[in-house]
Image (cartoon, one colour):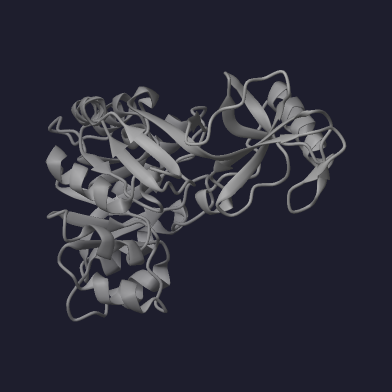
Length: 351
């Protein structure tokens, strides 16, 4: 098969999924966006095989991709807005749980003759969506007019202060109204401790659900590998030009034309998340090289990452290989490092 391929050790992957399931009480798999590189439908099928009763998708538009292969409930993570026609239609579906993050939106849904199933989101230090803790008491009068499924708390990734924030917000929410806690980015052991800490006088822990995406689907790197097909190989001499932008080649060598480009997510970068001095130095050095027209590709040839000759094209990339190296053959598969949450592959090969 020609193109960019994701090779999946299906047996090992499913063993990993079972391990996460066993270690995560109240697991709610997250299947959103590009399906973590696997596709939404495949993740919905695997979730059904795990036997969970609920999955979460990112947007109302993603419901259609999973609902016919997953028989349980579906949480829509993006908060409901009154101008989203599809989200409004889905809110009346008994299998759909709608997230609400503003008082005015909860009030609007509370007027529906067919009360929707609703999760109320609490604003965290993420500062993305949610009702501030000091306003949660105002929610109570509206909860009787919807089917209240609980409080959802989406925490930041950093561990420092995470439990303290979760405890503070959960306690405030439960003081407003009892209900299950739906948590993101809180480890299972911390969630269980929190549930016990906030439990009732009878000693029963607070019911909770844990939404998990990356740790579930991508947590074991040994389950997968990604490769790209060599499409052409050309000898080139120093000083000759190549590529769309007619870059001058710095030395004798080889131009390797390999499958994969911007349409696959190759060469597209998110802003750096560098948080320490070493990471910032690396980010600065990388940025300086790119400003000079040099960028290291995610492709490996003969055991080393290779430089792009120029920025990737939509469906292929040009790499430069020095003359002293033995070039790959047309049809060979090169390892390529992909960020699967942003990648689109041509083939998924199960092994």
